[in-house]
Image (cartoon, rainbow, N blue to C red):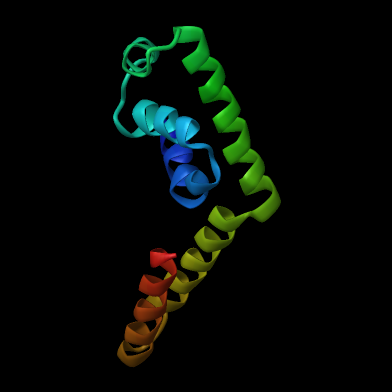
Length: 106
């Protein structure tokens, strides 16, 4: 289950950098919870072709994160802001909450 969450999150950030075909496979497998056989049938290709595409797309997403680190950086910033919010007064909490919401929109 953790891999599904991780790939979904990476796809949210970097999915636009994949080919259209890779995006369909990643979205179908992780977001729509389709099996390799279902995707193969829909895309009119072999199960092995879907599997290979899925693995290549996963590698690309992981590579993008390794090089750019957006998910890690935003997660760290979010955690720091939440920590400060817990120790702040009401006015500061509101300001930090607004910043946190803007970060989450990225």
